[in-house]
Amino acid sequence: MSDPHHKNEPAVRRRDLLAGGLRGACLVGAAGLGGVLAAKGRADKADKFVWQIDPYKCNACGNCATHCVLKTSAVKCVHAYAMCGYCELCTGYFDPQPNALNTGAENQLCPTGAIQRKFIEDPYFEYHIDEPSCIGCALCVKGCNAFGNGSLFLQVRHDRCVNCNQCAIAAACPAQAFVRVPADRPYLFKSVERHG
Image 1 (cartoon, rainbow, N blue to C red):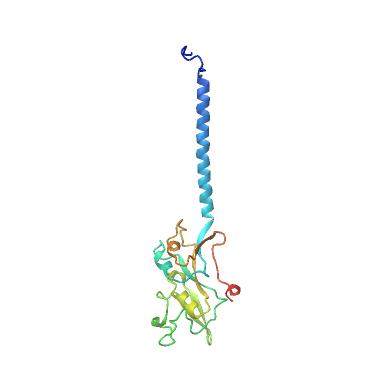
Image 2: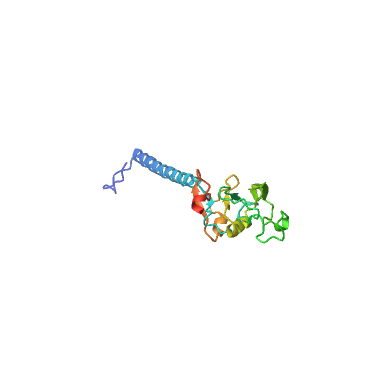
């Protein structure tokens, strides 16, 4: 069936129309599948990286305690025991100029009592972080860095962190110490070699 007024135009057959429609549907479907796979690839790539604090850039500003989306920050203090001097007057534990050298709360830097002190032998003490009590305020880190050997530092604990795409703490970090690291190596520790 052709129109006698349009002799130069070939007649569109039903088979051609269906074949063209099928090709178009396949192209649209392939493009959609490609978009889904690309998005999945970006998500997989994003899932392979997590937020962490570079302890050599951190300035112990205190934002980790107040800017995390969690009620209690996912950032906790970590102790590099190999760097620690096991001092009697630890400036990460005590106010640098305590009224008296005792473990009274008025002399301790940590507002939650998250640092536990244990006598080893005169004059050495071991300091341990009780992570559930730690709020990531960095007061101990600041004290240890100012007067001690820097063996206390902050790290994002990934058993707590929800790995927000745009981390609120990272956005508020004045030292730009928050970095993305591979999820299979999620921690950045201080070492005696680099410190020393």
